[in-house]
Amino acid sequence: MAANILLVEDETGIQELLKFNLSQAGHQVTAVGDAEHALAYLKNALPDVILLDWMMPGMSGIDLCRRLRGDERYQPIPIIMLTARGDERDKIQGLDTGADDYITKPFSPRELVSRIKAVLRRRAPQMTDEVVDVHGLKLDPASHRVQGNGQALELGPTEFRLLHFFMTHPERVYSRTQLLDQVWGDNVFVEERTVDVHIRRLRLALEPSGHAELIQTVRGSGYRFSVEVG
Amino acid sequence: MAANILLVEDETGIQELLKFNLSQAGHQVTAVGDAEHALAYLKNALPDVILLDWMMPGMSGIDLCRRLRGDERYQPIPIIMLTARGDERDKIQGLDTGADDYITKPFSPRELVSRIKAVLRRRAPQMTDEVVDVHGLKLDPASHRVQGNGQALELGPTEFRLLHFFMTHPERVYSRTQLLDQVWGDNVFVEERTVDVHIRRLRLALEPSGHAELIQTVRGSGYRFSVEVG
DNA sequence: GGCGGATGTCATAAATCGGTCATACTGCTG
DNA sequence: CAGCAGTATGACCGATTTATGACATCCGCC
Image 1 (cartoon, rainbow over the protein chains, first blue to last red):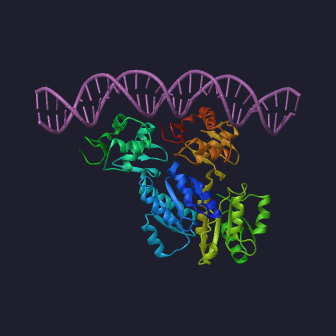
Image 2: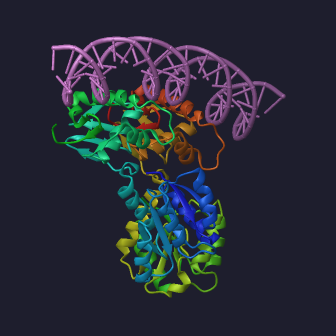
Image 3: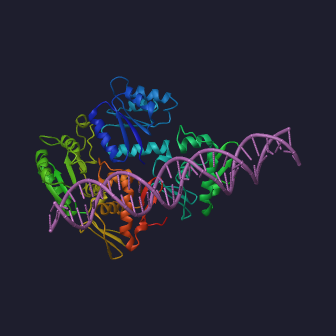
């Protein structure tokens, strides 16, 4: 579950310590000292999570949070607020501004790491490395394996990501464009029809265990991963 | 998993208690009364874990922790902080330390032991001296020997470390970068492709006993040590 | 200083993937 | 039932990734 994390924190001491601990947990951390630098960074890269200190010189964490929540581009990025105060009022206010979670100093590295995991799970289930199991179809991100009813299934990198996305977002139709954004990544120049081809390859790969039917075509809309028939 | 533990604690009562309990659990304990003695000790020996009391006369636990974290030589050593419940919040406020874990007094010896174990496993499972045996492939860190189905296998130092890491982290994909970090060490300037070469050498070394298949390529992701086929 | 093993790098071969296209098929609409 | 838009399929080929063999360097040890 390696994630790119943007840390916005003015105290260099805490910055270093968090950086160390999060790196230890396998994450990629970029640290900036204030809201302005954070915004500058965000113009060029989209992290998977943002850790935001509550109190900062200049634009405060809460202001930055509000601003990010107002921008469609940054809206989907989970935000965790860091604060020294355990005040319930602040917590309410923090969550009010659109933060996904809130953690009070001091906290253990382990706690922070697990909260990051939780927040990722909620926002982007396919980012976590948890095993997904649906109807006898099992996908393990850690070992990068897929089994259908215990039988090993072979699928290429793209099909793997595609299936992973589908399994973590079941029972819902996704257009080709959405799939390209989610599975291929944004800003990729690829024909929409290419999705069809990979859907086919995925179906072929799932055929041996009879799980191909889980990938359903919704004419005029896109595709859906669903347990129900039809 | 016998570990060398450095205990830094000023209260002799607690010191004795922990020493007894940890020895009981099979660990080798060295106890010192303050940070200065701890540093002196660390010049000559590197323990596997450090237990650090939070509040101490002279240099506090938190200062020592910071200092150790800043030194590349001590950075990989797991640190567990011992803190008194309800300690003045302000002093510890937010200044999370870079410790791997912290435990609040009073705690049960059993809890401490299991946390030590957890921290060791998390940091470096391959650091332990336990013999690893998977599918007839046996690796003994102590004697630095590898056998496949009883047959001695020859492998170079790097291949040995690589195999050791894999055997202690099975069923999981590791990217070339991760392998470089874990097996070669951080901050090493080595081409990623070099990993391929050592993978090949490792496979060649394991060939005689037919264990080469345990080293599997996961295209686009990295390599995996796995008992399962495919 | 010479030797042998170990290590990292490179060039090249081999394997696989990914995107596109042409074509066949399907289901809806009038 | 003809036409049409959307989808499935099979083939192709360049691009990327991995495997392999060869080579230069380094280091400890005679």
